Image (cartoon, rainbow, N blue to C red; front, side, top):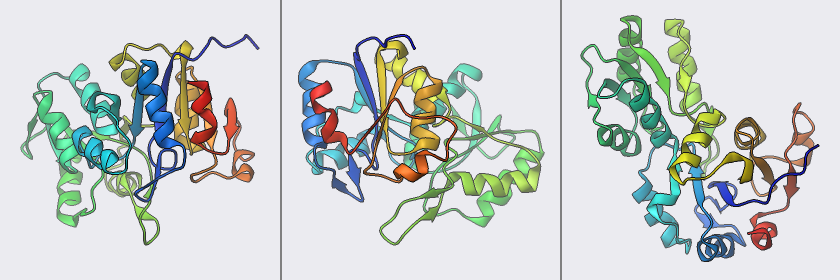
Length: 259
């Protein structure tokens, strides 16, 4: 195997790597501070499309993690970037919250339920049967089906919640149409993120806690990958996949000295 180039930029997942259920993971503050002090390009990534980057910045700040707005990349932003490249100034019927609707407004999209170019499904805590029914009818009427991310469940203090991927499956069952997922593990999210910070995959690393999204996306984007044990994946889980991360570490604290 060819020797990898030194890491000059870092992408890291948020939940399970930097924070867990609203609490910073030990070492996260030191890692972020080291990145900022080093001047190396970096991004904090999340497949959650509920919040805007500014919302997330405020939440992280309250936890003691100082991350500039420009260093936060969400599946909503990746989705908007994709749609802007595909059909600039288009129209969309959106099921989602402020993170997604704001991202689409910012690229000049009109949000409508009248013959939209796209039905865009994102994360929300209030999925309604009425909205899903409208989405099914619009897709059957010719709208293209886009989803921010394929995660079937999301975390909560009470346990797992149905997420975008599960709702997408319901709509697919009713329409026969598969969505295009813009978020992880689609390497598109990584590549658009790298472009946003002027970084290159050959000298970038991805840190995550999930094999099926974080590690897979980093691998397919051509980056080094670090799996942390502070999230959803155990060592036994790793063996179930036909691919492996470049490195497995206990937590983000183990990576501070690599920055």
